Image (cartoon, rainbow, N blue to C red):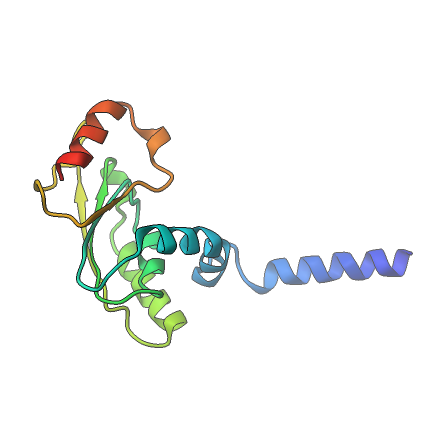
Length: 149
């Protein structure tokens, strides 16, 4: 029993350290189910223009680019501190390696306010609000603004 338990612990520890938890590969694997749900629900088509409200550094949207080509993302964040210089480019580079060819989606990062995305009206085919709703201080105003865009 001790041998089995020891083997299990060694295997677990080895697996944990084999792929750092902050690596693009680990993130991609951890988000696999969520990506599949979003892909099915959104039914993305090439050249669609997508707004992602509360996109953070853009890692999730770059991960979507592994599965779909030629989308145009507007990554809107309410907190400009969440848009760290170079992180989006780092994500695109990392996921291009996972995809084994370049990500063909385009990404623009923008900053909104607590009540508005500050994005242009009637400009988007789809709007994503992934794991962000609970962070909104002015939900009614933001949902109205999402309808506007």
